[in-house]
Image (cartoon, rainbow, N blue to C red; front, side):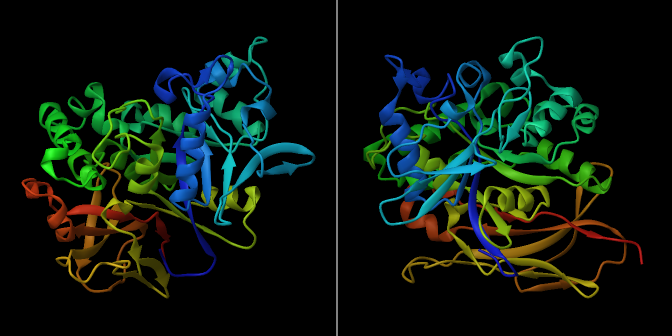
Length: 407
């Protein structure tokens, strides 16, 4: 998905499996054992979409009720990952030989990812520790080997985020597009229109391809982008990622392709993150790359981008224009453009250069800069009969930040 040194991995951040009480349509456990069909759906989706790493983020009520090793439901053929003798993750060995690293984590007030152990109990309660927020919670989770992430950033105040000083924040989460409490009041989404559009994709007589249903759902999360801009302008190092928030608990109805609307495979296919890792792929190298913000958020629902790049060469920032990988030549051509933006202390991203060809921009001011690729997916037209209005320019790749210091 990009150029440069190191290996690029396809990474999901923020996913719930059988240790979250609201996953699997609220039935993560059945008769005291993990909901095996739901667990296999998660595992199969990770293999089918060729993920390299999944950061699980389970809720406290189930996660705190089991030993840390028991929070990782290994199955036959899995490879345990151990550090200093302790289980810290595992690899799923897929039928085709591909391997997926799965790392444990939690989501409550904070979202620690890549935990190496349970946090130290608070007042004798492990669940209370998992629910602890703010700077105290962040300290507990870092001591347990995790990076501290914040999900659903649109619900947070700026001072609260500064106190947490997270290593990772979400710049997008599909949950914000479909939750009426957020989508309407915060993002201005017409929920009646959104529901009607999603139901059209579920109607077999509409002849719509459900894989393109993300066009009906997706809206940028501008409050999240605003928080990120302020952090970047202040020189606070943070990795901004797309949070998948997959649960298999929202749209159980079967779509015309025979798959439920919110299947793990569909969510993992729609978007993930590209993480650049140096050397061998280990838990430590993956955690280090994310802590260093060597990550891009990629909306692969519009196609896998090939050729995007963003780097500083000499005094210039350079951006490569991506193309859709393995695009059927019989389809209409998408329009693609790239742009460079500078973080403003006023919570905005100011465009400083844009075009449909490769960009080279020499900054005249110090600051934090990032790049975007945007796409108008005309190639979706044959799959959207009667719903062509959904085709518009949408973000495709969000790079992370390159800091330009004072000369």
